[in-house]
Length: 116
Length: 116
DNA sequence: GATACCTGTATCCTTTAGGATACTTAATTT
DNA sequence: AAATTAAGTATCCTAAAGGATACAGGTATC
Image (cartoon, rainbow over all chains, first blue to last red; front, side, top):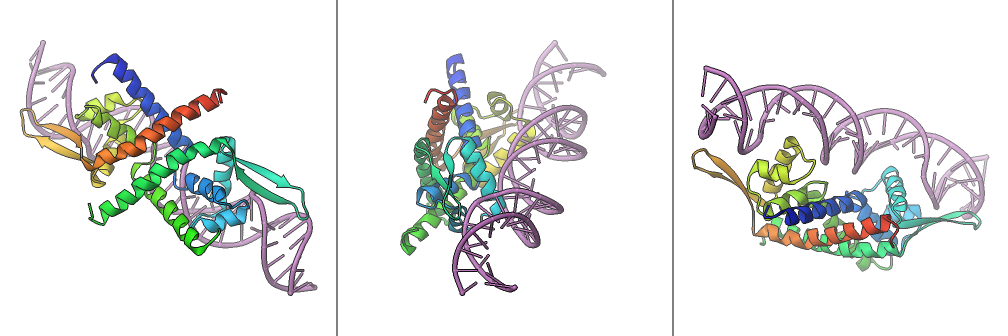
């Protein structure tokens, strides 16, 4: 490491990335956000839109995302009562993360197919 | 979901994000890449530069990254023999992922401090 | 000869992530 | 009355991630 200053900046960088990973990392968090963003509001609709996710996992992820202010859960007092999930305004900032991750995933898929 | 076409694109997006998460996700993979990128070549130097990482975890992450063509491990036949880790050219593409993740982490840190 | 450095590996353990399956409660449709 | 839908929860389990500590085998230094 070249200097104390760079070293501090480096550790801040690591910390920031680890924070993001904690909130948005793992296999399902961004897919759940994207599903809601693309119009799915109901539990079963979200579940059906994401291949392979189970009820239990979706339930956990929804709670995690709500706790982190990324989605909100609303009880619609209709007959019968419905639950609706919506993304918060703050959640829109995650697009800056999701887009590069998607892009890199596609680059890597090509790489693995030996086309790079 | 609005159409079969959009649905397919949505599932591709999910797949790409999950692929990226598999290769670069978790608490340590990007920090290890950044450490090597910023000049650390030796095992102990990398370990010392990343707060909290243990030998065992670093060893595993280095193997994972090597398997995924992101770093290479070279035995320098000097006296004593040294091992050097370097990032591959391909690894440079991960900057497009690391930078937004760092940026978002900082946004989120502010958010949690109630400044948004 | 004893001690320390380097690059890990070995062992053991705890926590988190993820998955399979069944069930609940209330309403709604057939 | 029976079957279905909705929004999950409950239970049980496996796998992966992460962590603590010790130690190995070689070289180098005191």
